[in-house]
Structures are given as structure tokens and as C-alpha cells.
Image 1 (cartoon, rainbow, N blue to C red):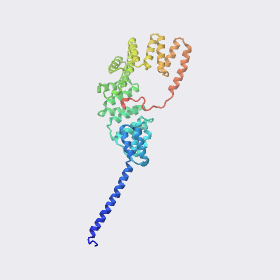
Image 2: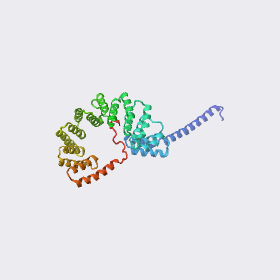
Image 3: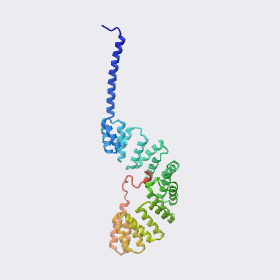
Image 4: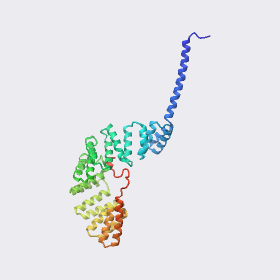
Length: 362
């Protein structure tokens, strides 16, 4: 019997259609989620959290083969490449990832700073500081890049900015001292380093760079004629533990004070602490030459040469000593080698990422 209630029948039909549409749409959404979010991406993110960068990168790239537009997969690939020191290869993935968090901006800039073209990190750190003007970490790492570019003017501007920023005062003073040290402006360098000691007497904020700090400060104090102060600071540094470089520096300070036996003791101690260190042998040779103990000097120079055969100062000193000993043939041979070393040192070698950067800045 036909229903006399068309509204109810229509409502039931409409409900079934709605259910069908919902199921169809729900299935489409689930399919879209599975496409956008694959097992490869999940596995890649778990690998990244474990520190398995190579495995994480492979999974991210696997996902990107299916969905090259996926933001999270691009970001994951960029992070992996940047941390694996493939900063230039990471750039396209960072661009496709779109807007970056401050942490990812730091990661990208740091990767560029460590790469073969660290100058590319300068604008990257500039963008970080536009968003976070008081970010001390970004300023410290930018300082490292500017130092590697010998950009003293911008380094000093950054040092002043750090000294005005809470938490950056010590790093600003250290940067200022380092810039002036590199410029051989010893008095201003000492002022910067002594400011560091006022702010951080135990050097806790630059604990990874204590040797660099003490070495630069002592050399600048010597240049200012404050030899006693230089020795006092090096002895303080050595109280923290054995260090062959610093002991060699202390030997040089005793040498300048005319205490040659104490200088010899320091050089011998440095050799004992680090038998592979050439410089104490070279300094012992210089000391023996001054005392006219040429045979002893020759032995020390040969030891130094065995440890650093292409070091110009060693080869040069050896050539002079052979001449003083009347060993003309040996002197001529070393002079030819000296010319080769001179030509080699004048050739600009490709820059190794990270080499000679002040650790305190990174």
C-alpha cells in the first residue's frame, strides 16, 4: 500500500544519500591523508629523532617521489641534509618547505656557515635577527662567519650589539678582544679580554675556549710590555689542567724574562705532555742557538722537522744553522726545500669548513 507520508520517505532517502556522500567523502579524505602521510614519512621522522640522519633522509626522499609538494617531507629532507653538511643541497628543500620556525632558520643558517661558502649564512642570520633581535646564539654564529671573512668593521658593530644584549656581554667583549688581537692592536685587545674577566672571572660562559682566551691575552700582554701579567695568567690557566700549548707559551714568557733554564723546563714539560708537538722543539733550538749550543740546537730542529716537515719556520732555522755549522751542502739542500715550502705556502688552499673559527662563537 503506497505511503501517504511522502515527507518521511523523502527524509529516509535523503538520509541514505547523505550517508553515502559522507562515506564517499570520508574515504576520499582518508585516501588523501594516506597519500600525504605515508609510512615512509613516519619512519623517517622516527629515524630523525634517533639521530639516524642518512636513514631519515632516504625515507623523506622516498615520500617525496610520490608527493614532491609535501611540506613535512621537504622539511625533513632539508634538516637531514643541513646537519650532514650538505647545506647547498638542502636549500631547495627548505624553499619548498615554506615558512620556517626559528629553530629551522638556525639549523639552515648554521649549515650554510659550516659549508664551503659561509658568506651565504650572513643574510640567513640577518633574517633570524630581524625576527629575534636579541638572539645571542645567532649573533655569536654570525660573528664567527664575519671573522672568517675578516670583516672587522661589522664584527665590532656586532660586538657592541652583543654587549648591549642581556646574556651577550661576555661574548661581545671576547669578540671585541679577538678582532683587535687579529689587527695586532694589543692595547685594545687587552681591554676587551680584561673586560671578559671582569664579567666572567671563571670563564664559565666561554669554557670551551679558555685556551684561546688565555693564549691571545698573554700574547697581547707581552706586546704591551706586561710580561709578568702574561705569565701570571698562563700559570692560572695551567692550574686548570695540563696543556702543552700553554706550557710552551709559559716557556716563551720565561725566555723573554731571561730565565732560560725555567724556559727550558717548560719546553721539556710541553714535550712530555704532547710528544707530537713540534713547537717546543723549535723553541728549544732557538734557546740553544742563543747559548751557542749548536749541536743541541740541530738535534732539536731535526726533531721538530720530523714532526712538521713542511713548517717554514723550522726549515728556515735549519738552513741558517747548517750555514753556521759550515755544512754548506746541507744548507744548500735545505735552502732548495725552503723555496719549495715558500711557494707552497703562497698558494691559497681551498678553505676547509669550520677551520680556525673561534669555538666560543659557535
